[in-house]
Length: 268
Image 1 (cartoon, one colour):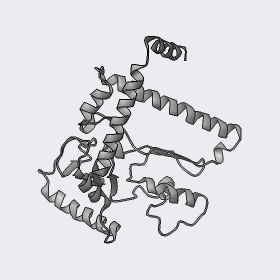
Image 2: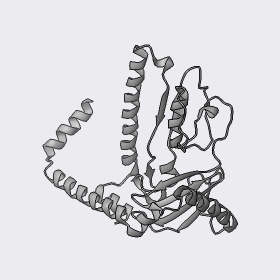
Image 3: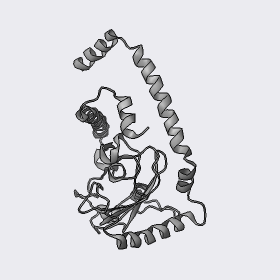
Image 4: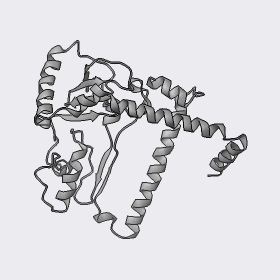
């Protein structure tokens, strides 16, 4: 079942994507309100101005990009690019940083903030040079893995994204190697690998060197997942089971039940 068929099965009466966006906006509003409550508590306790606050997310969400609707099952920009905000009055200056960073940078950043030595086995780098305005760069390249809904790995530089798809899983079929111009095409919509074969060759050399360095002679788990396709099939089975259970519940949901829900939402 492709993602579009899956989405239509989930919402058979959907005629407007704005309906989905409205639900997502509501989730953002809910999270924003609750985060505001946390800040209010810290302020009431008198510790807000001396508290390190880091706000981030585990993944982004797609609303039609690359054929994915209201989900996150790939390594493209809409999934890989997540918010990261850091607050510590007197030590973090107000700024927007465009440097390439990774989630693994958060742990060494926190440790340095408390004067704790960062273990040498940590792969991430502290963000404090960026936060203090001492530099405007961090990594030359960063990597993103997706091994559940599909088997993809992306390497991003300031200029390019090299996307390697080992198994498209629940995505629509696509090229095994794609290249995107991040500056001209930040949404990574137009594959330009055929126009720039020399760039693909150069980036692939960097990519495979990094993979070999990380694996240290061990098999690539992403390739294993792609070859066996176990993760995708497991997700598909869980989804089909969930969908059957949801339909069974909705069959028992009466018009009176719906009216009660709508009345409560209006009241809220």
